[in-house]
Length: 333
Image 1 (cartoon, rainbow, N blue to C red):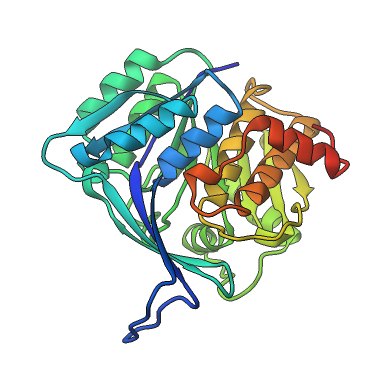
Image 2 (tube, rainbow, N blue to C red; image 1 turned 30 degrees about the vertical axis):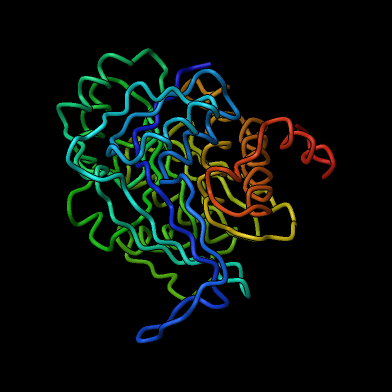
């Protein structure tokens, strides 16, 4: 299996359990408060590692206050030897409200050391760790990201990008989306990128499977190196479109696994990690519908299981638990 390097954020999550997410001008009390390890990058690394040991490394930056997060990642099988410890910056923080009534969440980020990553640091790591067929997994929570993508592409990395968060000026800022091999998007991110790249608008509209396929086909026409687009549809499952040659696009849909959710924080990261590892195991410049379906199944099942426990990183399930749930659902593991 090709090696996977996740270059991304590492956070400390301050989680407040609330009845309903706070509104502007409102002060509310929380019914519970816990501190957990997190960050989209760290979460995705753990999900990747739980499905692909021992092939996953994480690169990033933390403050002195975040060493315990690295310990947790290491216990989950992630190589953290590429993480810098900044003597000045604090570790990134996420202030998370989780609604007891809807199970939705709202998140405020303080980037800290995540935004102190330099291109020089990244370039050294990318050159030292590159092997033919290797994959670089990225999110949009660290500094120097456009330069990292450009450098990685020039070296030969396959690039999987999850544009979360997805600012409204991502495309107009000249962000090198065209150098990415794979995009993983939720409905909000797909809507935003579709509007920015194509001028189409899906605001306040649930994206259907047909919408997802249409969006993906147009992305392939606009982004020359793109080969796979995955759009998660929440409770409705996920859609993956892929192209083997110009003009030929295939689409696969996988319904969600129905569970009783407690906390959806980190579900998208869990999906991304499990999906990418299943895909990468069989990727050699292209994939089959069977491989794509399998990757989607692992992604949606792992994500569903993760919502049954509070927190993000600690709720990511082990591979054997995912396989058991897949078989119980009557799907092929």
